[in-house]
Length: 449
Image 1 (cartoon, one colour):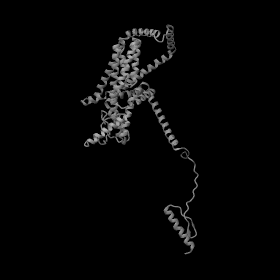
Image 2 (cartoon, helix red, strand yellow):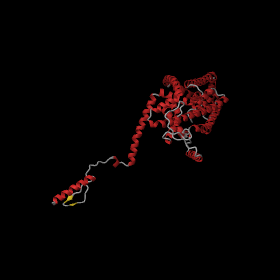
Image 3 (cartoon, rainbow, N blue to C red):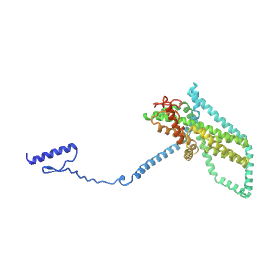
Image 4 (tube, rainbow, N blue to C red):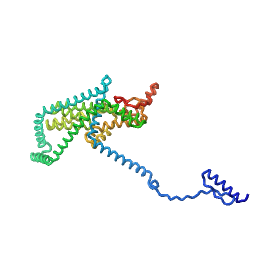
């Protein structure tokens, strides 16, 4: 075999070996193989943002455009809510009323009453209670209207006398000038008052429509609330049905506890301020107590604002001394609510930090006015329970104590102490392990999973 054939055979074997190993073949020079040299590949590389921008800037940019999309989605959602407010507001009110009356309807069903009849009985009883209270308030207002007019006139004269003889030392000419300015301002804003009256008439139509919508919605929530929730859960993907159903179950129990606690706190506020007004002889004590009761459904600030109305009525009807006494009563009732009722009653219903409550009310009022302030805290309580449950039990198993997670202490030290006590109880009683994960696909008629 000649040397040329030897070189060709070695080259063939080298190429075959390189093809099998997927590596570039070595270069040959004469009968001996030369060490393999990797080929040089020239690529036209263009710099990218990952080469120019720091990692922190790129991460911030990625979060920024996602945050912008979230803000846009939230804005569109709020616009949709504003367009459908005539429907959404009655539905929200019906949900709160259903949380208030659902235990009574469930108790009737457990005693053998059909669900439709039980829902109808509860609805009729609620209507009688509401209209009876409104009738009492209107009757009291009409019966005390003449006396109130006389007292308001005397009170205004007393206030004017106090302004002239008090620390301000206003003269009669200055008081007359202020009265004239008020009349001129009222005359100048007559067009705005007229448009406001027309707007009030349109709002009255919406209120009547919303009232009947609340009635129908409340009836079906009381009768078929659990089935409606089951239907909504079945629309979700299969793996999300059980966790969502249990989260809704615990959130509903939190809402029921919150509404009942709020009603009790509002009744105590109204009773305390109403009794004080009646003892001091302030007119319209019953309507003002009812106003305090309604205002107390907005936590922290509602009863204080409506109590201010009672102070103003006492000022113009009975004078500064009575108004000061009413103010002391309102402050005392607020202290009782803040230091006794809220921790004792509301703290067992929902564990929310006071700062979260204040911010939720402020955001609700800015977004949707009085209705937003009314539903902000219950919405926050429901979200708090649902998120905490899904975070701790993503697979949908029940909580160890069968209680909503939103009622657990919000304070870290108290929560840790409660967890340590629970662990110690389980260690002391090995025969009572925590309940296993349970798969439940539907929600019962009473809202139970």
